[in-house]
Amino acid sequence: MNHSQTPTDVRRPVLEVEDLSLRRVGSANPASLVQSVSFDVRHGECLALIGESGCGKTLTSMSVLGLLPSAISVAGGAVRLNGTDILGSSEAEYARIRGKSIGAIFQDPMSSLDPTMRIGDQIAESRRIHLGESRSDASRRAVELLDRVGITNAKSRLGSYPFELSGGMQQRVMIAAAIACEPDILIADEPTTALDVTVQAGVLDLLRTLQAELGLAVLLVTHDLGVVADFSDRLAVMYAGQIVERGATREVLDELPLHPYTKALSASVMQTARAHSILPTIPGRVPSADEMPLGCRFQKRCAFADPDRCSQPQEEVPVGHARTSRCVRVHEINNLEVLARA
Ligand SMILES: Nc1ncnc2c1ncn2[C@@H]1O[C@H](COP(=O)(O)OP(=O)(O)OP(=O)(O)O)[C@@H](O)[C@H]1O
Ligand SMILES: [Mg+2]
Image 1: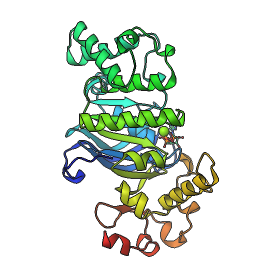
Image 2 (image 1 turned 135 degrees about the vertical axis):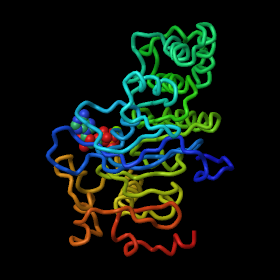
Image 3 (image 1 turned 90 degrees about the vertical axis):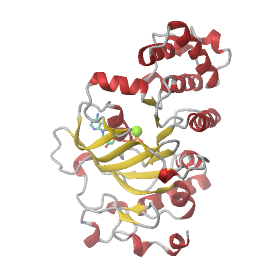
Image 4 (image 1 turned 45 degrees about the vertical axis):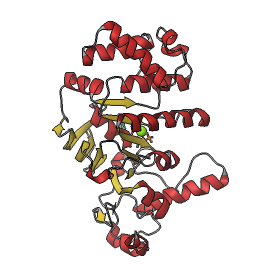
């Protein structure tokens, strides 16, 4: 959680995603895989994008990085980085943006580390290319960065290859590479999902400290509500390619989730914690690209569904301060006195 004095909503937006729609190439269904998704991430804050598997979180973050799979095309929208639209940039421009302005870390460190290159060279090269630093300065900085992310004997590790390191250490090296050129924003897609719980806690602590020290904007993509509660300032809940709820993390998770999907998600997490099982579950499944309904996308699994009103496309309904729920029944199904008092 960011404890800076400046309220989140008056800080400068670093990343703005506006009305982003993504479609599967050749799909006959007019409903998009990612539909009119809008959010911003401001200087020094962490926005979490959460939701079950297959909701479109990774596709959304990949479209920011210019790394969409070839089977997916952009159907509309804008992605602005410090005010400039970067969606549809050339591959060379994206390579520059990814190296310098946007850092990225993924679940699998080996998806971004080059297995054939020594870790020191990977970090130093990025500073030489993007910041024009000399070989010796870049190498010195690589030691500092490895030290900063908790690699012991950093200097002697410069010559190691990624495969010589444990999973947790690879994750730390990937973080060092991601922040090497002092990016404006870090995109972290399931950064700790593949790690043991104890290693996970250390990596999250590191991310939190770096975020505060560097004033980084962070877009955190995860299905783990525990990580979200711990780390993010605001959250956007995605379901089947749409944002169905947004608000301050504390309000949504601790006080009152508004959308039936968020309610089901938090209830299942509590149940999971009680049953000591591993994965929270909600009965039913996320609709696939070809069966995406035109009305409410959650209605088949929703305890509050009303066949007449939910078969229409749902708009985001503003509720209280900077909160929305994409549910036509939001006022009926929630005790909104709680929010009025907030
Ligand atoms: N290369 C692809 N070709 C076709 N469909 C794809 C492709 N990649 C993703 N999809 C589809 O897009 C939807 C969203 O996928 P995405 O990877 O963004 O989900 P996610 O929310 O990140 O899930 P997870 O939590 O499992 O990572 C899914 O229905 C998926 O099947
Ligand atoms: Mg994903």
